[in-house]
Amino acid sequence: MKSFIEFNKKIFGMKFPWNLWLGLLILVNLGGGLFFIRTMEGQLALACLLFGFLIMWGIYVKKGFVRLLGLGHLIAWTPQIVWYIQVIGSTAGWFQYWLISAIVVNGLSLVIDFVDVVRYSLGDRQPTG
Image 1 (spheres, one colour):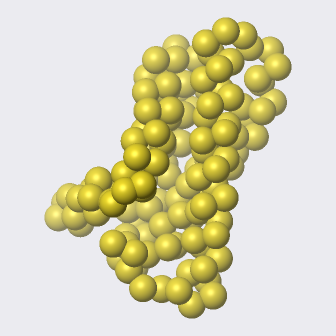
Image 2 (cartoon, one colour):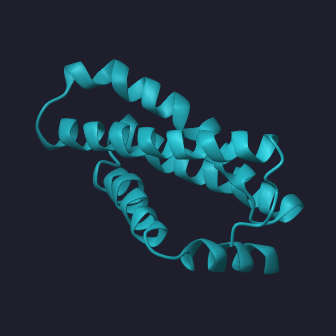
């Protein structure tokens, strides 16, 4: 339990602009997932958020707060984005706008996370926070 609390402190203690970025990720994924919870896509957003977090927490326990944490998003959000792209054409209104925002925000996050994981694999293994 101590590692869980420490991990959350590290995440929510991130400095500007990463704290704003984290807020946007939470707003889109958690907020949108809860708002559209009656849809499979809303439930998928919440499930992927939890799944990615659990992967990241596991990495944190073994390796610390390192760039490899981005692997959690890569594993959880890649299939989510693929699914959203496949269904977006059959949606409309606010639901469609949310799907677009999730694709864009999570897609940008995947680029950042991919760079971090590559940097880690190339030897940049120092704690980031």
